[in-house]
Image 1 (tube, rainbow, N blue to C red):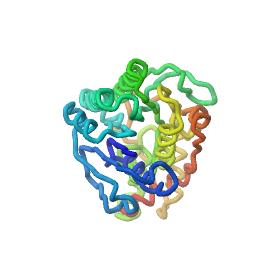
Image 2 (cartoon, rainbow, N blue to C red):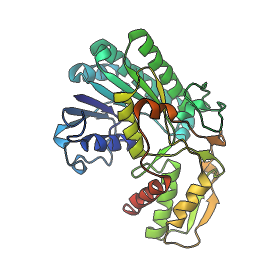
Image 3 (cartoon, one colour):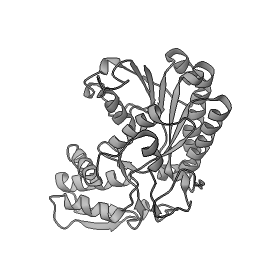
Image 4 (tube, rainbow, N blue to C red):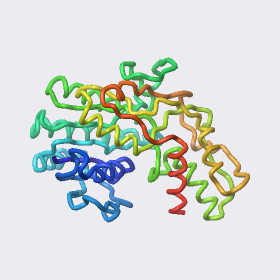
Length: 327
């Protein structure tokens, strides 16, 4: 089997690679080639991936380059593609809406076109989109379901909604086996401090290790979000690609809502430092920030048999320990 991973040097990409290389002897991923594509290889060390790394090849490429993408897919002819590469920060998207749209939409179109031209229905494609697409969609106490209308409220969500529609259209018109995820918040060791849990964890680790003032700067703590450990996320992605139904959209989520202030309290409780102050930073507030967003994962479970293995407390502790090792 030949597997192509875009965004392999990113947070989810690294965890997906580690998951695939750990499947030795227990799945269809225990042999074959893995081609990773990324534009930025900062902090990516192939040496940290031990078993199976001889099957891995990594190339640098800008996925907005139509010719480059076409040549990669034409030459490699993958059996499966995990398209993870994206500009995924909501805050950055408000500052750079054009760059966000170009990266997220044009790159995806280039991949779909190249697969259509060189692989046809032989290559399965998982495209990671976002729960941000739902925006102000109504939902009941069981969480947002995939059949609810999307209503994106920020440039990042708009770009992913556009890609979502492109994928659905290419599946219907060209019969490409495309699987779409609307992934809710995920967290875990290795995530950038641009994201809320990792931001808190880094600040606490720096207070402990670097003698910084015992203050954690925060944005809006009075919102509820659905957090899933990244290690469960990548397991969901492989389950969808191998057991899901193409053309379908899948929520990748825990199915539970957590208040941000509660998660911060748990992180602080893990700290060895007493009396950490919480102080709001207006620069961390978003122009639009819905109070509650959490998903329903019943469809994902029913179609694939996947279930999460990590609880939120373990995810928080692992994230904090990861930052402790780097502070």
